[in-house]
Image (cartoon, rainbow, N blue to C red; front, side, top):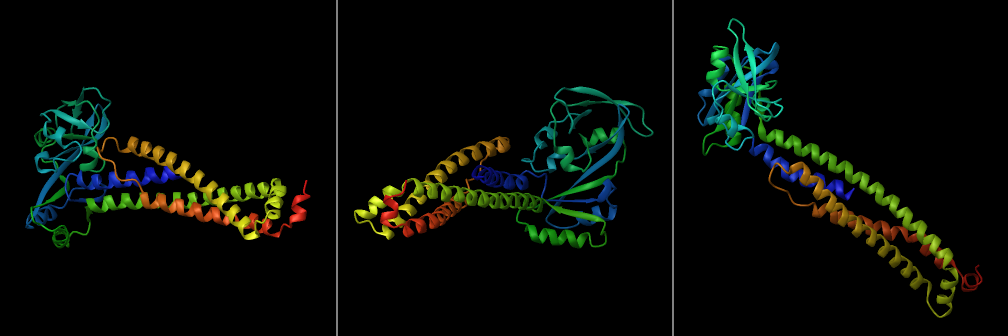
Length: 334
C-alpha cells in the first residue's frame, strides 16, 4: 500500500504541472458535437484585447473509403512546448499527422465531397495533437492542404493564448463577455483539466490510504496474537522474572516495547520496499514527461505514526494478561 501511495503521489506531482504547461494554448472554445463555431463568436473573441485566437478548421473526408475527420491549424501560433507542435511545424504540404499511425509512412487516397480524389501521405509515429486540437479528429494537415481538399472548411474550435502581461482570470472574464450571446459555445480552461487530473489522483490516494489503514489494523491483530502466544509460551520465564523482583508494571512495559519494536521493524521494512517499488512504478508512467515529483514524505510519516499507535494498542491485552499472572501460577505452568 505504501508503494501505491508513493506511485500515485509522484505521478500526480509529475504529470499535473505538465498537463497544463504542454497544452496548445490556455483556453479552448468549441460547440459540442464537432459543429461549426458561430462566425460571430469567432469575431467577438478576436476583438478582445490581450487574447491571441487561433482557429482550428476541420472537415470529414473519405480516407480509403472511411469517413475521417481531418483538422488543420497554424502551428506557429500554438504553444511550442505542447506535444506534437514541433512535428506539426515541420509538416509539409500533402502530409498529415495521425492519431492512429502504426509507425510506418503510408499514402492514402482522399476523397472529399465535390472534389476529385487526391493522395495524402501519413507521417510515421502516432501524434496526440489531432485529438487535442479538435475532438474526434484523426488527422492533422497544414491549412493549405485542407484548403486544397475541402475549400472553406468551417472553424470548429478556437484556441486562445494570452498576450504577455494578461491576467488569466481577466482573460477568462473577457471570453465570457464575448461569448455571452453564444451559450452553445463551451470554454475549456487547460488549468481546470489539470486540476481534474489532480482531483482524480487525490481520490485514488485517499482510497489507498483507507486500504492502508485496514491493512495496518489487520497487522495489529497479528501482532497482538503473536504477543498473546508469546506470553503463554514464556509463562515460566515471566514467573521467574517476577520472582527475582520485576514488577507487573515493568513486565507490561517490556511487552509494550516488544510490540512497538516488532511493529516498527515491519513498518520500516515495508516502507522502504514500498517507496522503492512506488518510485519505479511512477517512473514507468512518467518517463516521457522528463520529471519526477517528490515522494509523499508526510503520508509515509503518517503511515509510520499509525503503525506505532497500532503496535501500542496491540500490546494492551497481552500486557493485561501478564499483569494478572501470579508468580506461583506462572512458575507451575507447563
